Length: 261
Image (cartoon, rainbow, N blue to C red; front, side, top):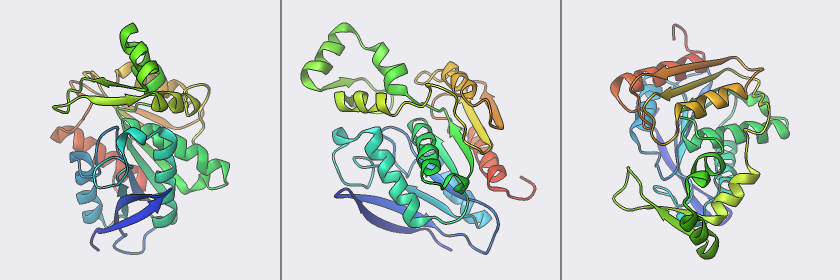
């Protein structure tokens, strides 16, 4: 089977989707990729996951959030709630049966919120596992907002937006007041989390954007789950070196229930 391109409309915005169906009847779970802040579904980790899924005849679903990659919409109009709604709409349209959510950075936050929303509507059993890479749940409240200078905080409140330097782009990243305020109502690290599925956290020791301590904090909020934490010595936030990718792909296969993984 080949990966096919699709587009669906969510709240008036065109969302770009790529879907690889399973190559044969299988009792293994499918994979759902959830990217990070300002990333696209065409990144190194997502493409490696797609190549592996094709070789293993596993299904894979990926999409770009509004304001990202091939999707429509303005980036500055994006919030966690909006990107969550888009992710759920794509999940509902293109998946059936058990799925493993693979979330990178902000995508891990989206994945955790998806688990909560699916459980609220009685579909929690659809999630067979969570693989979270350099997870950044609640990053707006716990990581970005506290790092603002008084001048930046004043500008955010006055103008509704601020621009902060990025190590990944030539230009700055824009953070809006709406993103921070919406992030507050989507927080997940406020009490125990119960995903009812295996969770694998992969975090690098040299992550300059989301410290390893944040991944450890997430683990502490998962007391009832079967949680594995892999600490990657020398790993940065992107975790895209060959060894990093091998670890990520092996974990995805294992969570999907592949024999010998």
